[in-house]
Amino acid sequence: MPDWTRRLAVALCLMFAASSVGWAQNGDAPLRKNIDDLTAAELAAYEHAVQILKDRNQADPYDEEGYLWQAWIHNCMKIFVPKDPSTVTEPTPLFCDRGEPPPDRILANPGMCEHGKDIFLLWHRAQFYYFEQLLRATDPEGLTGPSTADVAVPFWNWTRPPSGARYPKAFEDPTSPLYHENRLHHALLPEERERLEGATSARLTAALIYGGDWPRFGGYPQAHPTGGKGEFESAQHDLMHAFYFGGDMANPTTAALDPGFWSFHAYIDLILEFWLRENGAGTMTSLDQFLRGTQPTSITPAPGHENAGAVPSMGRARIYLDTTQLGFGFEVKPQDRLPPRDLIADLTTGAVRFGASAQSPFARLAGDGFNNPDLGQPTQIAQLPVALNADTRNASVQFARPNGAADVSFAVDFYFHPPNVTPDMADRAFRERFIVASRGYWGSGQSDAGAHAPAKPLFLDLSEPMQSLLPALEGQVWVLTAVVSGPDVNLSFGRLSLLAGR
Amino acid sequence: MSDPSWADVETILQAGAGCMNGMVLTNDEGAFRIYLDDYESVVRFGELIAVVLDGWRRNAAGDAWAIVDGRPEAVKPHAMPPGGPLDIADVDTVKRWVAIGMPKDPAQPVG
Image (tube, each protein chain N blue to C red):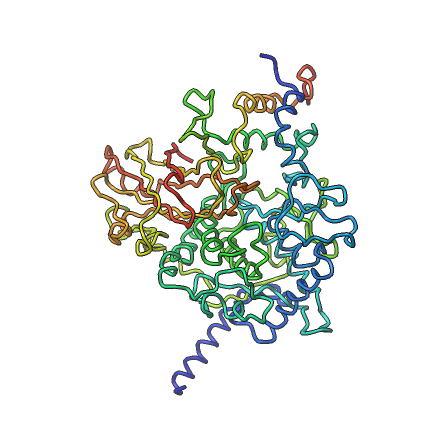
């Protein structure tokens, strides 16, 4: 290495090290670091802890301190635990149970990730609180390997190119407990990189956070009439699960069987922390709601935890707001931070006007959509005329699956264009100019979807393009075109309808 | 039309008991198993039950489910039950029961 290159590298390392100090909270607390920045010893300690959790399942698949139970907490509302494990001969199910338990088993409720709601992000932070305590307690003395006393889940910044062929190198070592057979393994293809540009866009995440609109970013209360997923969950989290990882991660019920789940979501937890630092918790909703999860009683609950109700829970959402109270911090280097606010403002405001500029605000943040015309024509294009007037100024649109459809994952790109412009998906100029947003839905793939109902609609807020188009184009009727992508979509996949407002 | 009683609502919810009974729901009071054939359990989550049962598109008059491509259409993110809406009159009965305070017997209103 030339001397100037070495000096530059040293200078950058010093700069990164110095700039990460501000994020190290609660001096003695374990820090979540970028998995690619772990020392060999730190990675070995994390792997050792994960392996111990997995090994516990060899002795007892239903051990609450084992890996399988922790995976079930993510999305298993019912598990029928044998009253006498010695009599069990059939393999332990990786999926959840349904209905009533047979006489030789008792009902247990591991947990349920709160997808499609405003407690989505805090639920996962709560799950991590217990999971990390469990990891640290596996071998703190280092009796069978490296000490796990200071282990924290390392995050994978999936908005950056992976250090391995598709994932962090640490996930791709077949000898590592972080390796998982049932996930996509091929190197990230150029066409995948392009279609996932929005899902992996740090700019899109940053725009949602700097926008300061909590429900738009983080989700709506369960009883909200047109609520559900926030845009981060739908446009980024869901598409990553379904189309980047695939395999077990493509199904909410089995997602956490893949150890990559934890590092993927550790970065999402850092994104929540970015929100809290930018906006605080003042506009967050449902903070008093209790979070579902039956965690090991050996773990001391988070400060402020109350035993309330008839079954165990992880406590109220609000006790998970403060990482210092929870006893962990993040080591965040500049490349893992949000893009700066002024860059996002330059991309989305000022001279950038939807419909007039060559690139829409969304395109400037996140590309021209999930559909890749190089991979063939989209399966469905649904269209809806929308009059530009005061009544539709704050309109939103619903994309709904027919009831009874299989619960498959899919993506929808929404384009809004004048009626005399024919949508041409092969025309990049069309896509970049008129794309409003991309949305994803992470389904189980099951035809009988249970709690993950296939009928869950997606919503699109049209107010931002409307504000660009009105009042200058008042009276015109534009067309909203929805392009649906996914391996299992068909011609009657879903339909669009206009809602007065949200 | 007389106000609905718990007996009316229990009959309506019975179809979902096999799937939902034993599931855990939470609110600001804590975490609880839901049993659709248990009065106290249903009262605890009555407002939420009414919202999700009414999560399907209605016709213009509001007195029937709109049928789109031969099927009803969910318009709320957590519409229940997943297999399709209950009879709309039954959903309106549940909503009415919730609106009047979820009495066990309407002749003896709660609270």
